[in-house]
Length: 274
Image 1 (spheres, one colour):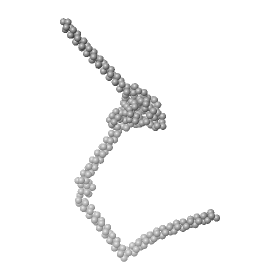
Image 2: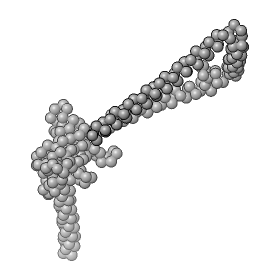
Image 3: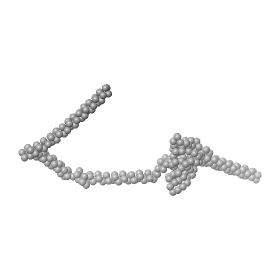
């Protein structure tokens, strides 16, 4: 009996020892995970670094959440600490930013809400502002820019796509009607009889024009109309001659004015020399 009891006691001790080891491993693992979690959250919330706070008022935060990153020149420098609705058209966003960045963020800096990638989380991008301005103070208000509304942009793109589809459909119908000879343009292009009629009409117009010219030439040689054409030609020649004489008179007048000015200038020079 003593041997059996001793074996039972040994097994019981081993079991207790194994349970103790498991419990110890579990506790140590839990402590490590807790410390790691506190460190990660602290790093994200800037709990272990010197920070300063600024606020911005936006019309629409576009899905921005507490804990989202603040970026300056593409670098994560802070996080969103709090979001509070002030009125129906304004939302206050409180930000905590690494103190080492404060000297680069000026009073005229601007904050705009963007996306981390095309479909990523929302972030706040801060532009530095003018180097002539002083740095923004702790607790200051930073100017904001209205963010791009993706819903509005997608709506405009959809409207544009719908309009393009409508125009494409209309063009397809027009081309189809022309191809099958429908409508005025289609009949004109596809109906051979209309094309022949149009060609015949143009031929008749050419013939009529030629006949009119021949009649006019014949009328010029006619005894009754010969004097009429002569008078007309004489009037045209007189007008051309009068126009030419006017140009010559104008030219002569300009030359006389030029000669008179030269004489007057010569008299002035003579007076100065005397």
